[in-house]
Length: 372
Ligand code: SF4
Image (tube, rainbow, N blue to C red):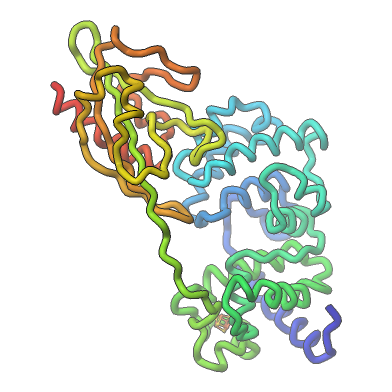
């Protein structure tokens, strides 16, 4: 985009003030290189994938644990997939974990373990979209790229008082960002991180600290004394609710003690694919139980106990899952499919269950009490 001299000067001032603030205030983060040191693109990639839809405090320990287990992309590529899924449990958006390992495999097989710096090549890898590709190029290789995350969105919307609601304003935001990132020179790695730090520490979504902001003299939203209005959001749309049922199938051993439970690794094409959970119906039911599904478990469905309900919110819908409890004598268990297995009830919480099934597992005790 060709910019007038006045706009280019304004962008230059913003860059200078922001980078000088960053030099004094940069956050220390486990994936970030020390000032003056070259970042490791593996760390940049891993952290950026983990940070999608997830906050910095939630990601820190996961990142450190992954690096401890798999210090290089070669280690991650060779890790057992179920171990990667287990360590990812709790971070949500589980397709990211599956793509993570596929991507690590391709980095090793096609690139000899070195991430490319070209954005098009990066976007051809599993799980890497335009944002992550730009972040790896800029932060990991100190090469110019337009990196726009939620923090950058917010700071730019406020600096330029963009009135168009998100996401329609994305084009405007990108035009402003391209002016700001142009001419960044040797600090291509620092500038996006400076925006991210400013957005996280000063230009926060609620109650931004404009008095402490290095950009306040240039910021149109601050001039209007109306910073929180930006970014302008579209009217809220109510999330739809889906329903389904999950089955806690407990097993009684030959001595009459209930000590085991049936678990199931979810197929990749379902929500929470690849994660461990409990058998469940589709989530498009009108009701929270499904007797036909239960017939798969023989006539025992008659003995099922409607034990309660779990509510869980996903990004684009809310789920209400009815929880049914069944107790089966170990000798009467129907044949299991390849994704199903039996584990000790005491070990369930060590399996790395995703949040939905962790909530569901809390009903095990109640079923146990009901049948004991
Ligand atoms: Fe954000 Fe306030 Fe700084 Fe403007 S002056 S960029 S609104 S913190």
